[in-house]
Each structure stands twice: as C-alpha cells, then as structure tokens.
Amino acid sequence: MNPQRLLPAALLLFAATPVLAVDDEASAICAEAEERYVELYNQPSSAVEDAEVVLMYKYNFCPAQLTVTAGTTVRWVNVDKRTSHSVLLKDGSEPESDRLFPEEEVDMTFLIPGPQDYLCGPHWETQNMIGMITVEP
Image 1: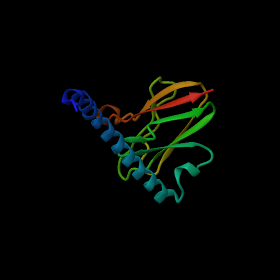
Image 2: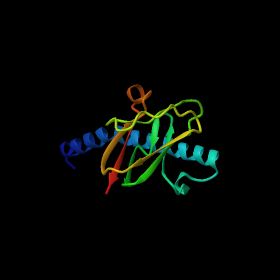
Image 3: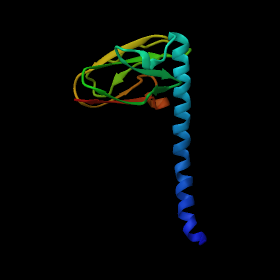
Image 4: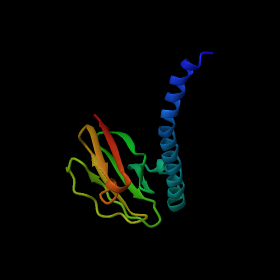
C-alpha cells in the first residue's frame, strides 16, 4: 500500500478526533444531567408532558440543540448541585430569566418559527454555555 495515500486519510482522522472527544464529553455530561434529573424528580425528563425539558448541568444545556413546533413550551431545569444559571434569548425578545438555583426551572413558550439562539447570562462567555431552539411551523 502506498504510504502517501494513507497520510491524507490519517491526517483527516486525526483532525476529526478532537471533535469526537468534545461530542463524547458533552454526551457524558448530558447523561449525568439526566441521572441527576431522575434522582430529583423520580422520572426521566422525557416523561414531562406539558413541556420539552432542557437540563442545565456543569455549564451545559442538555440538549444544546432542540427542535420544537410552534406553540411548544420549553422548560429549563437546573440540575447542578451548586451553580446558578439563567436563560437569555439572544434576540432580546424576552427578558433574561432570574437566576435559577439548583432544582429551579423556567418555562418559555415559542410561537414564532425560526432559529432561536439562547445562552446562560453568567456563563456564556467564560464557559461557552450556549444553546439553540429551532421552532418549526
């Protein structure tokens, strides 16, 4: 086999590895967040019937990206043990939520189709705590 042909493939694989590591880390953090939710509420977050749940844990939104239909309520729940978070829509259409301390939550209902970037007011710059809701008609 020609080593010159293997080099580009090896470089591509090496370049992709950090992205996979980040995705694996985020997946592990979100799995921990779900375990914490179950511990606190005695049910999985998917069992909530009146809202789509986004967990706030270890400076992450879980899931970081969510697609919903117009009229859906999204509930952010802080499952961290000590850290407070907030929810701030980047377009400024809603005021920033109060700080959510552990086991607190905030709901927002999305009516207008399109992408809606949001962030944690205290942690978006230092911890890159950013998410996106895509609202479909």
